Image (tube, rainbow, N blue to C red; front, side, top):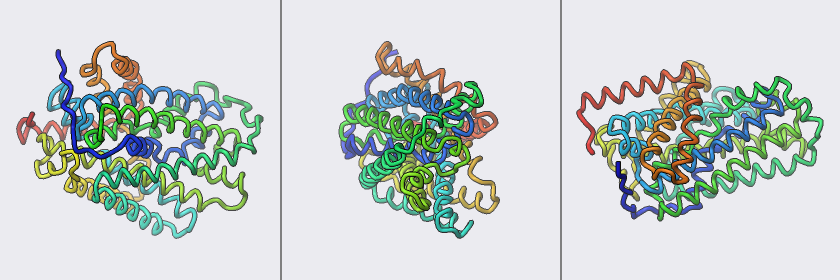
Length: 423
């Protein structure tokens, strides 16, 4: 089957530096705050092997989506690739899985950051609720102003965030103790697998910026550059924070819900809760900002293609702001947040629901890459190396795979009631 490269898209304003910042915000997310400690609890110092494994795996996965985005820049992202490879039904399934994963994921992220603020200032549930709502409002307003503003905000935010994490590592490393690495695998090397499963949430995000590829000034040049830079930055930061957590905190890391705060406390002394709260807010805002921007563009593209109501289509063209789609995303996220606050279910179900949907998107996206990318090219080999990994990750979602199955059924039902998607 002969594949044609999409026509270059003009009108985009994102630079490679802004794209790198969006990637860093989407992938780094909130995982770096708590997951190094949780992984250490699961596998001890051997959790570093799980971090290294996922960093290595993320490189070909990111390269796969970067190659697709550079060749086919479109607001539909992975949904567009699925359409080109497998037809409109697959495109609708991918689009719905991603679009409807953002509200629960965003509400969980907002609550995660808000919990750190509550730990610093107190106030209980009221502080958590107010902070989460303010985070959602801030992200919505930023994206409502346009993707260029979102890119500039993300660039500044990523710079502050990287500096903060490097400061935490560099100031605490002089207090590292080699004895903290013994025993290296207190629960056996088999615990590395469960630790990797736990860390999976930290590496979700490489697909998010595919919906913004049409917004780059020169997609074929800037997207690979942004991706390569983000892989290096994200991988280095994850490994550095995880290493410092084990080397400095030792066995105490397993009982810490805020390892960055503990690292600053060791390095500087005193109460570092305010620093932890600041880091949590930066990370949460960065991740939510990137995902709101990508999902809003995707919703507009799905409306354009008939997979969602056509009312959402405004904003699908590069340079336009998809405000209608953004309003839908924000509204659903507020509803999810309200449901959690009322029922007291907590963030864990929301995170797992979103993760199952994202991995479903990965599986279909990588499968599409195997059909769309030139065979025996470096990008094609990257996709081939990744497909087995994402299938394993999909199986590891367990019962929460029911959510993307339900979303898939709803997408196909919508197409049947409405009629075939437009080409």
